[in-house]
Structure formats: C-alpha cells, structure tokens
Length: 180
Image (cartoon, rainbow, N blue to C red; front, side, top):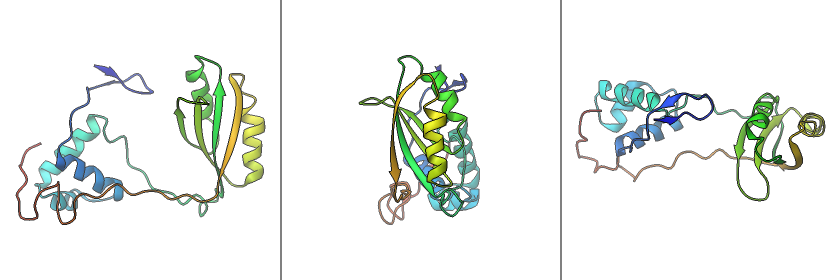
C-alpha cells in the first residue's frame, strides 16, 4: 500500500470515482454541511448508499476533512501574500515543519521551477507580514531566499458543476444504480 502524505499512515491505493462519487464531492465542496438526506436526494441514491459512499470517500482519503471557507479580511486577517522560497536541497521535511508552525500559514506546497516552496499566509496587517517574512522566515537556516507577492484580491472558486439539469451525469429521468 502507498504511504499517506504527511503522517506516515497507510492508505489504500487510489480507486476510480464514478459519476455519483464526483457529484457527492462537488456537492460537499459547495456545502460541507449538507445533510446525508439532501446529498442522497440530489444524487438520486438511498440515504444508506449516500452515507456509505461518503464514509468510503473519507476512509480512502479522498475527503480529507470538512472546513469553513473564511473571509480573511472580515476575520481580521487583512493582509495576504504568497511567498516563494528557495531552500537548501533535501531540507523540505525540516522546512515544512517550521512553516507549519508559522502564524497565519494557510497553504504550503513543494513545487518545481524557479523556487522550491510556495507558501500562502494571512496576517492582520502589512507590519505583521513584514515581521513574518524578515524575522521568522529568513531566520530559518535552510531558507536561502524569499520573494513576497501581495494578494490584492482573491476569489475562491466553486467546484465545477455537472452538466445542466443532470445529477451524476445522467439524464434527468434516468435512475442511477444502487450500491456503494
């Protein structure tokens, strides 16, 4: 079995998702608080089937959790920035642990290209952002350089909808198969 990302957990190999699974994921991405009943009705399966599918998606690691989409400015985090970092070769795990501990760190990615790491941070103001970059980030020994890209405006994208008037890619009057 493949190893889980950050925790060394064992996870099952990826399993292809069918149209109903994809519709469930789209629905939960749009509204993570949707009830099992509303999910089942929307994708035209029984509540037991919807419940089993959601649990399988969680157990398989497809769904990593449920969270709220936050308006950072309204939450007192008015300054956002993407920060690119060049790091010492083979220091990713050490650097990642230190970045995870930073206040306001929202997303960390190891990438290819002109820099090694892309970090998204949200801070109360530019002074706090400056302190984070100049004092906290640049004091990490494995960080060779940083570049800060201020975010002026951001928009969360909703998941792509399925074909209009259909659930699970089926014709409006078609019955989806039952079963997990």
